[in-house]
Length: 400
Image (tube, rainbow, N blue to C red; front, top):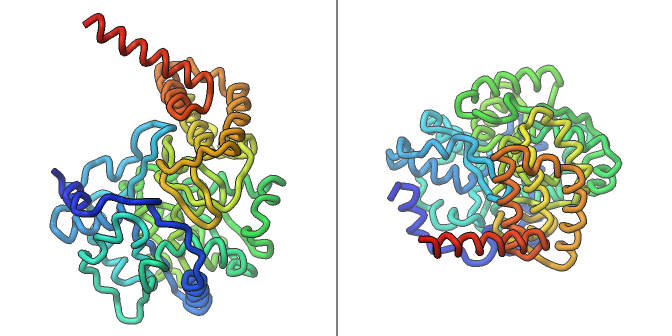
């Protein structure tokens, strides 16, 4: 067993939603307001979140096991539009730097609502600097969900803000559409200067390119005179955000999955697989989203595009609550969700049918999607695929 497997096995298995039940308590609302006050009054300022993968990464470093981190933990993972895949994107060489950033930053949310952080945060021997702050307790963790829902729009008014990440170009494209403007009117700022920066290599190879990405962002901030930078770059956002806040005297916010919430994305921009969890604010129509994605990533292979399409379709049957997030395995197969999924599947077939049998990769990806549809009784095609799959398996057993 690896070190990570050992520490995870020491935690009680998750029960209920991965991030706990929806919480709109006054404690969370007040904590979100406190963060806005800190962000408004202090320069430099940096807000960081400790996801479960960063926590395991830091515990590995603390126990001198960082070299046991597998290459999967800092590469972009396999192609699979039906599987939830994620990692911090950082290899062992960045561990000491990340540890120092967490000790020196201004605000850390330790994400105790996120299994397994609830059980492992107490094992971490980080010492925050004098004057720094954190989420007061488990109930006020994962506070970026509430902050974006309640505070983001008003905080941005009158400022020069920047969005950085693998989905930045999708957000820029969507922000110009009438569909986005209508859906996001309660959350998207009206009166501010907004700038977008697509991360180098679309956020891939972050472990190797971290300092080059940082240089790019430094130039981006200086050129556009940005006051607040919202960064969605996995574990790299922590290092880059903290260091740029100090070097440039700005506010940096570790935005994580919230760019996906603003774009209604089913996949991370840098991956060809479903996101491990999906925060929700509003829906964007399937064709509007795919138009924005294809303009943002015109060089995708057929299999890569098909995987992103499947991830976007499956997002329609995921569990959703405004201002909250659910893991990729947490579904809501309500009649309403299934009806929308099926209507979008008709558009999907008309638009992408030419990709289904283009090569072995697209055939494999299409088969995975049909298997998902059949397993959850979402389509007749999927059901027939499962029947055929079982018959073939039975025939192989009989032949043996």
